[in-house]
Image 1 (cartoon, rainbow, N blue to C red):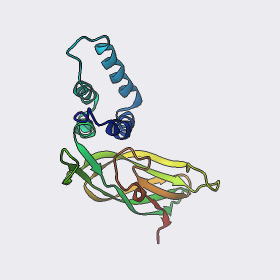
Image 2: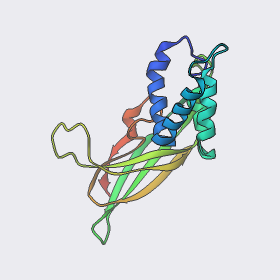
Image 3: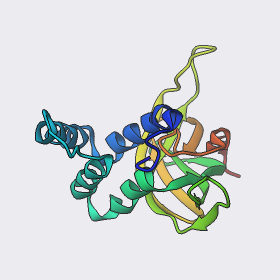
Image 4: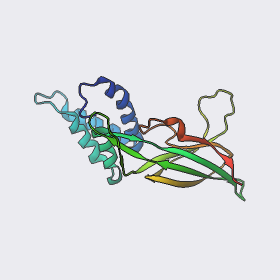
Length: 195
């Protein structure tokens, strides 16, 4: 985004995703504080004017070490994620709860400056995992969330096991699309009873 000053579509389409991902990963309070301090420090400025790179540096400074690379990926690189929920099962526990095992494939790709020739990049990032109850109302837009937490995902296939209080219907990786993923439809899957 820092190199796309003349490309409005990137600001409007990618920009909103980036800012929402920042709010969710850094926390709303931290993201708002960084923006507030940046605006205060640069309001009524005379030339030379501040650039977007200065804001990115502030976000990186506010991020924990585990997220500094993610902040750079959001703003400085063309980074795409390919996260897939490839299967999910549940088992009822002795106390009447449900143990859900979700199988996830995670990949990260980075493209060159014009968006061509994407290459694999190592992924090591906290990503949201969600488990949802069955829809009660036909056509309801939102399913009830039974579980929504981040888990550190690395490149490749991994299993995540969580326990929820109600029977699960669907589960997925990045269920609220915080990461830029070309195929978001495969982020969710139906949860079936384990055999």
